[in-house]
Length: 291
Length: 264
Image 1 (tube, rainbow over the protein chains, first blue to last red):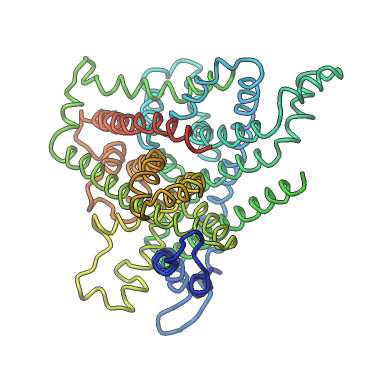
Image 2: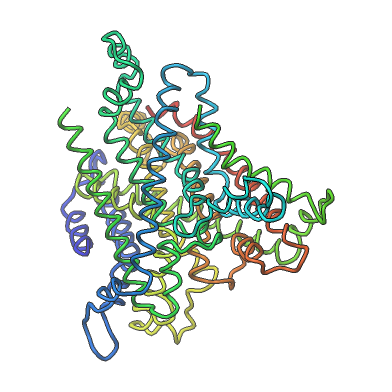
């Protein structure tokens, strides 16, 4: 990405503005200015963060900070926790959303507005207010429910080794994104014809879903999963306020003592996100050109 | 529908508790929490959040639209693809890593700060404007992503028709371009407002509590940093936030429907 700035300027210098008749100069100039400014604004923090991590005072260039990431205390545990939460969230959100999205298209189109509203609500309600509600509910546990079996459930849900409560909260947060990408995927294939054809040939409903619809939805499901994973890996608010040490919370905690390492992790996590997204979009492009 | 059951339990119950807690004080019905959440430091925080979100939304909306237009009118597919992919990544680049990237750049010992000697000129990232600068980092890409489809939907024929009728570039934008784009633009601005309004991680990691923001106040109150008997103020503040966010979203949905009519 570091080579973008010179590239942009040369492209703009050689480009000709289309459909501008007799005045090609002016638009060319403002477009160049906008692109260069944007490139500076977006690239400088990335480059500066990288420089910050590799430049040790009085020593010059060193990649030590990146090496220290892996040996830092708590790194493996928190990353594994976040990844585990991510996988659990993906499974649950797909299990819940895919049948609902298919059902709304085939059997109950009247429920569609309901589903849309349900899947927009988490966008309207800021995560911090959501966690305010959750923590109040969890605080009830010792107060009111200590003698009922529900109390045991509440304790189990907050197990610090694998906090199920976070999975539940993340499923709600991921719903809008998962539903939208799945719905777009379903819109691209003719669900009704496909499923009726399969039913006529004697397939059962689970069979239709597993062998006909899901294979056609691979890229939509991949993008839903990716968005969910990115959300879980980056989520800070809920995990912090319920005091579970997920990956972002770990970064935050070590920033006090090891500033360089925390910035290195930040750069590192951005790179990983970038690679995942590139892989996803190129996979999508290949599928489109193949069909 | 298992999905609806799930949402009702996991999402509905906390929201009901939130509503109930807001109107309860010492076991009795009361609006005292709500009144308290709209006074003094809490009101300052709420207004601070609204102010920074509105600023980020408007600035991000305008700048993002210019960037999107620059990309859309460019003839180079690679540039377009690169900017769109980058926007997709950067729009999701929030939270703690974003704050640290900026601290490393323009913080007190940041690379750019020390290289240019900005520290001596009284530069500080840890205030209202610094936070705005950082919020724009994920807001502008989001606006680009929202507006590019709309700009693609502006048909060249409309511009040609306007030119054939003797319209100048300005007149084209004033009477054709902007009116058609308005719903998409405003829709983007609303999304940016929502994003900045509910941001907590970036602010917490960056400014702590030097900038009054409602999300920081809620977190403070939830972690026990309030007077005894005032715990429910956090819930009342949350309700305030939901009301503001809900009002803003209520503007967004009809707009989206309207823009869908022209841009297909």
